[in-house]
Length: 151
Picture 1 (cartoon, rainbow, N blue to C red):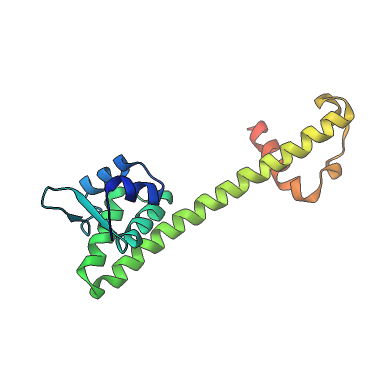
Picture 2 (cartoon, rainbow, N blue to C red):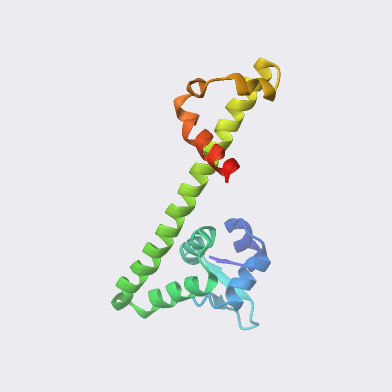
């Protein structure tokens, strides 16, 4: 079965302009064209489209995605190079996740902080709490914020 660019975009959950951009950037060498030049997507193309979307969501640059696709089309002798690209991006995602986890910890601490402030009658009253009053799960974030405020 063939899909138009609009149908493929809808199925993938992106705008048709996104697929046109991917094509312009050389990410869709597998897409067929009708005699009139209309892009024709097949069911099998969604495997590629999904990996492109996945890599895009990780923040991988378009040029690296194009390199990855080109390597895939070159054959099995490029497996090590493909793995290296994926591993590099995996490390970048792990670093992003660590940063997001730290950010979430700070937000969790601030949520607790404001709950306590409401219960005590305001933020000024929070200064009367001992450091031990901060729950263990929020202490690292509290210390991080304290250090940032002193610098």
